[in-house]
Image 1 (cartoon, rainbow, N blue to C red):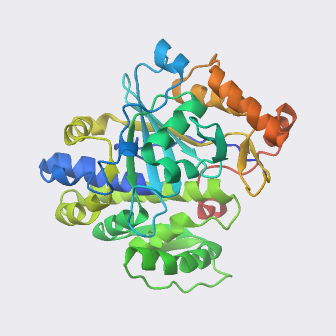
Image 2: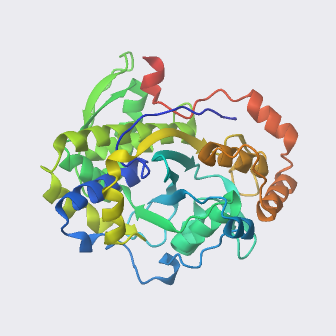
Image 3: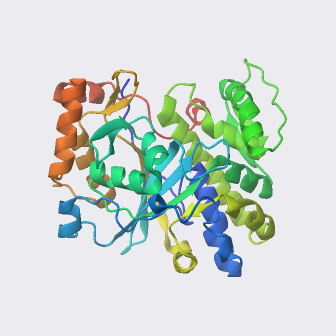
Amino acid sequence: MAKKKRKKKKGNLVLFIVELIILGVLIAGIFLYAQLNRGLHEIGSGGNQNDPNAKTDDVIINEEIASNGGLTGYQNIMLIGVDSRSGDLDYANSDVMIIGSINNDNWEVRLVSLYRDTYLCTNPDQWEFNKANDAYNQGSAKQLLSMINANLDLDITQYVVVDFAAVARLIDDLGGLTICMTPQEVIHLNNYCQETSQVTGLGYTAIEVDENDEARDYDLNGVQAVSYARIRYTAGSDPKRTARQRLVIEKIVDKARSKGLTAVQDIIKDVFPYVKTSFSSAQIIKMASNMFNYQIVETTGFPFEHIEQHIGSLDPVVPVTLADNVRELHEFLFKDLEYSVSQTVQSYSDEIEYTTGLGQAARQEAIENSIVPDTGSEADLVR
């Protein structure tokens, strides 16, 4: 019911754009485009760039954060993967939401996955509470960033949006990935492959599985690897799903580095029509110039302490409490051990506690029952 765990990870590429969908696209974009310095006009071609809700110059940032400069020295980015079956990146449920925070002084990168069912104020302008993945569906990037900033005391104005079709094509262009899976994971992968193939228009071959088999390596193509990363129906639910995505990302990084520039042309052609971003070509090149300096030092999921509870027709993940989780978030991202949440965050936290009845007692229960790690794949745990 409750889950809490953090684990350090290592990496030496631009892993501030880390989650299956996001990292795959940005590796192709930042690394390969910067190397060739060509075709940069393609980035951002996915979605309607003229949509006013795609603009980020007036997203909500809580007054205490905007005025005190507490996040000076960090570059914070929102990484968004949408569940779009039509290829439209403008309005859809955002099933991947990653906060990437870069320490500009030492190049350290920390990443936080916001669980898609987290119960938050999804529309700060209207005091509306819902699952977090509804914000992008209702108001595109502007509303999602406003939700993140208002609920978590952050200052994010930059974002990248893609769907999983781009990642499947990227993985195919890289020649596939090798991933260790349990028989149970293989069964679920085969089930997801049917829909993933239909949505992406790409093919796959079902994997034969022996339920008595041990966990072992499988060579996966794009549809299969994306389907693996979509699995939720084993122990750990959404936190475990994000862990699988991280594993796929590490494989993508390794494969991209080994391929170098050999797959550039295919990736440019296949991936960038599916990207929507606030980054300009010049900004991408600037980040790319420092890409080998960046090092991911830690990743986790948010909220740290949470309980699943019915709220009306919803079945969300309830942070217990939001204020406590935001304090932990600022400690995790910015090493601020004495952070005090803004009045806005406290008001949201009070409202969630009032609506759900989940306060400090529930928080202690969540801590005591925190047994499912938010890292590693199921196969990693059984090996």
